[in-house]
Image 1 (tube, rainbow, N blue to C red):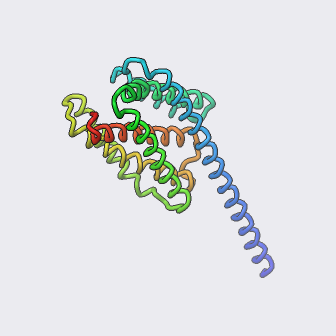
Image 2: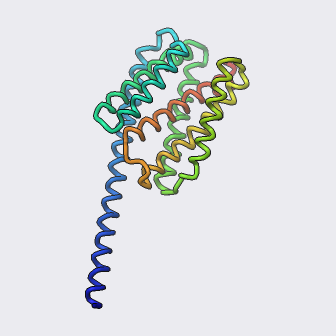
Length: 229
């Protein structure tokens, strides 16, 4: 009986070890696929932005319909091969809408410096937060409630700003979007590490939107504090 019990314990330990290795492999695969796809979509987004630097600004309602429509489409197709196509459609569209904004900054005095600083700041924040989550292996699931509440507050602020445009509100929204996006990056990276996210398409789109919001917020804040706003 003792031998049988010992054998059962060894078998159980062996199964747990195999399950642990499979879990680590799954996490590494999602991380690899997510960051590979994220790099490709950022490059594609930069390309479409370059194409539209001299184009007129995209109408706000066209932007909202296109951005949220393609975002919902990506979520709906995330479990199929078509999800990859929708990811590039979404990020390409978002890049195209950034192009005229970047073109405007580049045409103004000191605008190039603002764009470069915004790009550098975005990269620094993203890699810093991602590196922290990856190396510390800390569970940031506690940020879920903050992210949900922050989303509702930001949606309300966006609606108010569309009805009553106020410079002070725009600056406050930019700062809030930076905090919100930073929390999302920590949360999403933690979800991948701890097995809460296994769909790399959804992980990619979440991180992309966070990077987009960081960049646009930094552009707005740097422009305001430089006196170019």
